[in-house]
Image 1 (cartoon, rainbow, N blue to C red):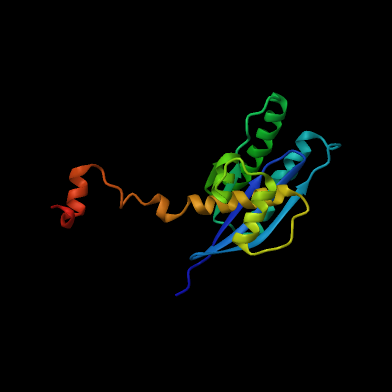
Image 2 (tube, rainbow, N blue to C red; image 1 turned 30 degrees about the horizontal axis):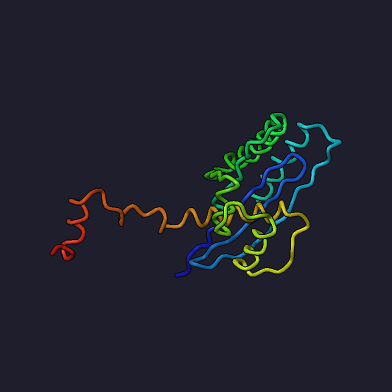
Amino acid sequence: MQNKPKIILGIDPGTLVMGYGLISVTGKEMLLLEMGILKLSAKHDAYERLERIHNKVADIIKIHQPGFFAIEAPFFGKNVQSMLKLGRAQGVAIAAAMQAGLPVCEYSPKKIKQSITGNGNADKTQVLKMLQQLLKFTEAPEQLDASDALAVAVCHHFQDSPLLKSDDHKSKGWEDFILKNPGRLK
């Protein structure tokens, strides 16, 4: 019996460039399905761009049928207007995922970098090189927003690992530990 692959869509939101990346996970094997960008013109109305982001995410979901949706959380900068615009872009992408019934997870940029490279302060090039090793691909994307989105998907896979989630092995105190490990008493 073959396991059904787990497909994860990762999004790096942006009002001018949105990155997306899809991976398929079967057992311990991760495969790159697709990564790319949606480039939006600054000449277009802000609401028109938001509609295009929503439609692109909805189209990706329709084509690839992911079971999971992960998105990069906006980082807090000094420019409040930029944060508001980025939050709107993130919101319409999340709305498209929720409309499709996907569970949504959000990760900070630092958490994503830490998950991929082991260093929360890694630069975009370091993240790309590690993704190339993990997913066994050599081509570099047109823009690093695509590999950033791919990193979000891989981060979600690592965070969604049963080893990290399992509460079965955690003791709830000494009494619980002794009950679960009677042979360890001396």
